[in-house]
Image (cartoon, rainbow, N blue to C red; front, side):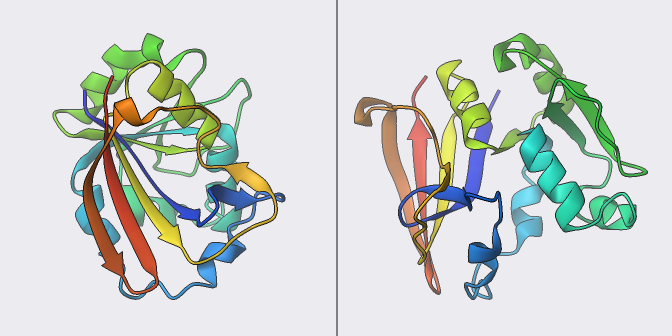
Length: 183
């Protein structure tokens, strides 16, 4: 299975501020970034933690506006790692799971149908996927912002022996770094 962690991050490695806000990201001109639809065409399923899922629900008011979800993700399978029951936007293909990501590999492989799994976040869940050898690529869009505190990109140690830089792109104020992650 091919799994990617693709995300925006600050210069100093935060995904969100101390209030789980991404306001810092929306202050940066993103007009030169590639079309998100091109990336999504390579994705067969998504995986995310409960905090990321709840941020999406709240930020875009997806329960009240489920058409926003279906516009972006259609009926793509989405695995949400949680111990709680959370609301689901109408028409969304949400699968609530818990435990070690390695215990769900068969379900991921069936869901991606030959495409990639996009592990959206948060950083701790991505770390669990990396610990299990399931992440094969990191694509980091680095924004020209620093934060004093917040949610770290990856609260793990991953040595240079596991990371190989495969691409560097510039999109306006963003730099995109792509790394292959050895298992």
